[in-house]
Image (cartoon, rainbow, N blue to C red; front, side, top):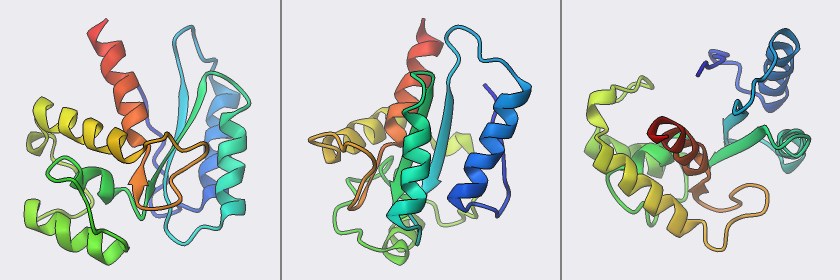
Length: 154
């Protein structure tokens, strides 16, 4: 597994450009997949639709979005995330569980049990499953994490 890090350049068009550039230089092998993972942030539906449309071009492509931001996925490791409506709500609640969180993930904070709890909570919020991306508070990152776990366990 490899990740393309864009630093602070998280605009959907730039995320997609980085992915297309990477895919132009590598060949996905059998079982490989390429996923775009972004925050809802302030991005318009038009921006997000570009990413979703790209993900529909191949069964090897995926798109995961956290609304309002990625930290919502992290919050779900510790609680159900009810009542989180804004980015500030999310940060405030996550600080209760990870007081020193600074955008770097210490994998020691996330046990297998907590990861499974987050998957369960995210899936239960994604009911019925969103067609494109979460319009309200939620995340589809769990789909990617389930995929990774299934590959590791086989």
